[in-house]
Length: 151
Image (tube, rainbow, N blue to C red; front, side, top):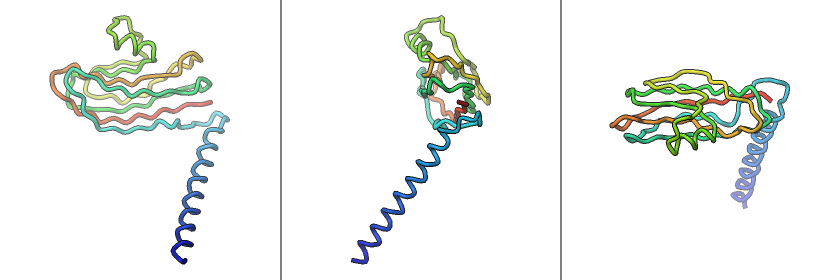
């Protein structure tokens, strides 16, 4: 009988923890005073990209959010990496090989440490972070991405 009470106590504590986490999240979402609010997009990755292939990290934002700022840091020991940020329409154009792609940001090299402003457009809310390995060797990349925005 004592074990049952302990088990119930653990369940109550766990549910209170979840409730407090949800309360904190809802307070951050409802913060509409122009304070910096960090979107639930904070990713760190260590990954490999095979030769002549790519890796994407898609994300979406609410159409009402403005002042979108993508903070990206990545590095590799190969210089065959094309890095780009683009919206969904342009990613689809890039994917099928159309040359007239409008990038929000693009760089080729071994590293990037930059803040990129994303367009605040009510019709655009889906974006792609793209790592394209144009070389003949597999490449290891370390990256960290944060997306900050204001409502």
